[in-house]
Image 1 (cartoon, rainbow, N blue to C red):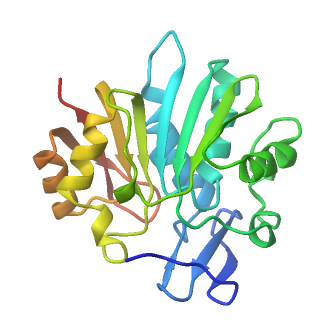
Image 2 (image 1 turned 90 degrees about the vertical axis):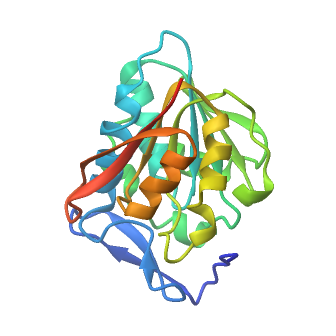
Length: 230
């Protein structure tokens, strides 16, 4: 299913932690948890994923579902805190227009100078080119569907899997897709997603991951974290 956004189908909403999200009227699903967009992203992708990476060199991240750019902004902030360079690749077939991202209030949730400028720079960065946003964060946004993109083997330390739910985008939650992602990861690379569904776990296992269910963010009992088998 190819998801195409239109001005009429999307609306900005406020989640329980005060941070914005976007709701799709077409798919009856939000881009983030209604219990807190920033809180969810911090818990699932930063605290349960990025913070576990222990490398002396640069960190390579792949995000599936760039969406609002929230995960990218939070990763930039954490890279600045750790003073480690992050190379951030993000797959997104249908990017948001400035009408939406200019209104999102995420910059007020990160304690970094010029947060709004940095956030907009992430969104305005040229597609399919690596762009340096600041000293510790480089981004390459891939305007494509994951199914149609070849990925370099053994590149990524961590994958943020933040696609729409398996009910909305079932074609992205398959063993075939997870096998492709597994090949793109470094040994013991980390895969994190907000979902904890049984079929997602089984497909990850079939794709060669070691899978664990861990406590989820507010509103979700569990989420999945997985590791590439070596």
